[in-house]
Length: 368
Image 1: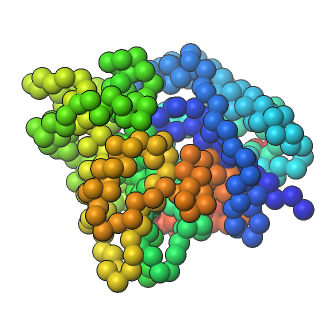
Image 2: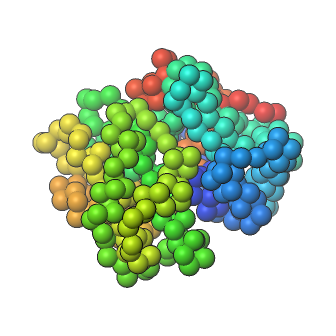
């Protein structure tokens, strides 16, 4: 009996398409293989422009949705060929899609992910589950974050205070404290501003090993201005994205401040670390138990962010999730494979305390 699922994730950072193959038996996930494929430059640029300007035409939006579906399907087929896996052994693909707008507040809350799942199902011949977030919104939730339910299922430990921290474009935490309800939400920017700033200044997609940030000096005045953002004061549940934290936001905050570009990068690292830590120190933890911060996502590879987290949280053991058996690069792709498994088995996969939904439901739409 095959229990193989594929997860596809392309996150806020748009640094690529992560594909993960997992075995899921009785709800427990075992990672088998994974690969990150790059997004074609023209599609990535269209997505970045769309998220930044929030302007498009219906034709351009429809075509981008189609193109992304083709990209996802192509990479799944490449992945299967490379690993010599027969497609009839895969029970389902779970595809998050690419978020282009997330607006959970207001009179008519919505979230929008594109990447036509009909195309993925048609071109791979594999049942595809997608559109995970909107059902949670339909039940009064924020549609995010969804990965905490996966974290709870795989990483909860009754004798450890655990926080799972995903640093993608946006940073989010899942709080797993014994005998307390699970909470999880977006703390604020992860890599989105760091990647955007180095791209604008040096033309690079990201600051490899924080080498550029290390040449700069953190500026307290700018940090104070950056932290003076309403989002950081909001209570959970809350979620955010590029529609708030983007280069236009940063440039507005830089008004009246003159700094070297590398000093701005160093300050953005501190913003990422401090906005996370400010949330963690608010938690009511069981002081008799050890504390672990398990980090995943691209930010887990940033030595400066990891260093600052350890320094700012002296009572916490800061590790990557890889050290606990779930590859830190693949966490979200694996989570969407698990969400597809939940949908096919009609298992509730949101946590109302996390998203604000009024009930637990099985998320996702099945495309065959």
